[in-house]
Amino acid sequence: MTEPRRRSWAEPFKIKMVEPLKMTTREEREVAIREAGYNTFLLRSEDVYIDLLTDSGTSAMSDRQWAGMMLGDEAYAGSRNFYHLEAAVREIYGYKHLVPTHQGRGAEHLLSQTLIKQGDVIPGNMYFTTTRLHQELAGGRFVDVIIDEAHDPTDAHPFKGDVDLAKLRQVIDDVGPERIPYVCIATAVNMAGGQPISLANLHKVRALCNDHGIRIIHDATRVAENAYFIKEREPGYADKSIAEIVLEICGLTDGCTMSAKKDALVNIGGFLALDEWEVFEACRNLVVVYEGLHTYGGMAGRDMEAVAIGLQESVQFDHIKARVGQVKYLGEKLQDYGVPIVVPIGSHGVFLDAKAFLPQLDQDHYPAQALAAELYLDSGVRAMERGVVSAGRDPETGENRHPSLELVRLTVPRRVYTQAHMDVVAESVAEVWDNREEVRGLQMVYEPSDLRFFQARFEPVG
Ligand code: P61
Image 1: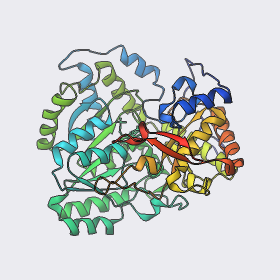
Image 2: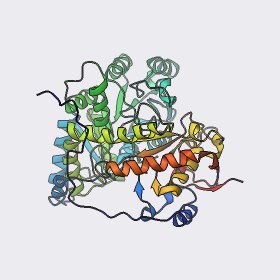
Image 3: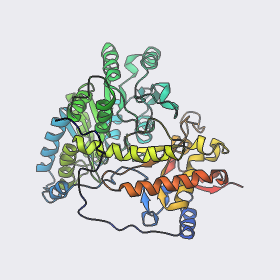
Image 4: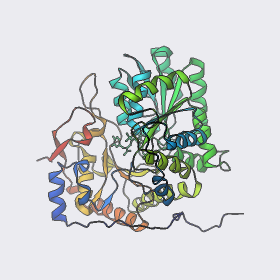
């Protein structure tokens, strides 16, 4: 059957239950953001109208998933739901062994403690906050080997998640393969703006790692979204299913860490999956110390059931097309208003380029933080800073890192908001854009030591 010529990405579901939203006045929002120290993480969700802080744990579960919750086998050991999840991970990702964890960072913790030794180096296609911190806490150092294009918000390279093989080769030559416990490959690279890695590139990374006997560990948090872009953009993949592409990606890697709160459409959960028995065994030993028994790892039986079902739903083409389609819809609206965003539009959100939006602000006055606060003031839309605050300090020098990407992430939860919500978001961003010259910078008045962006507090400067 041929596809009709005119057909939009409309949602492949209808809405069965609704949650009312609270509208606030500008005066109420002024109080709320001041009390939150100009940090959107510190707002009460009650004071938020449209919540685009994150797509993590905020998706709407399907009726199938809710039905699965009723089938929770809440046994301490050997829950039926664990075996269902194990079978789903084997079928969809192809990894042999499963270690359940309460969420993604639980998996990162176990893996880092197991594989990384003091002085090790972990190359990867751009850092992620929790992933890098766990690598550092285990004594390792993350080295960015993503292509340069990923650091330029205006560069429309179709696979900005690709690894620069020359950079990776250089790291291997510099430190030696024995100092590299694994290469860390993310799909739909979050901090780059939800940008995909191509399979052509991943095949080359695999070959290079094989030459040196180095493992690849995959951050599979948004692998289905990455697979959609491969199907759309990469020669030779148009006729492959999302499930086939996901399997090919995973097959090129030795294991994964997973936050099931994203692709897998659940409110809580995660896992580590591994092909090597020895690494699996070591992580399984640690899971009982930090998370829970190896057949639940911090999740209730019902949570594992919802993940198992969500994984199946995540690779359905109609779902992923509508999910990425909605993000694209928002991004294109913003482009029509002339707002500077990261291109190409990514899979899980639209990223505002705060440097271009607020050129009057020095990066040390936190343009992305200030812009997120301003957007909240305008409409009650909550976004997230992804710039100098998120990047934190270099553990060796104690100096602030100054990433080239200073972004505000408008993250779209899956199956939650409508096209009209996206219209309101775009209108509000356009309003702030029109008044951008009035936006003032911020100074940090409280800085926690780890992952400071979650709890830091700010005040307007001058
Ligand atoms: C997010 F501001 N992401 O994007 P956990 N890998 C990847 C993630 O996106 C991810 C985790 C590992 C979140 C939540 C979050 O700096 C932040 O299940 C690619 O959250 O433990 C999480 O998975 C960790 C927001 C995390 C942040 C860290 O919104």
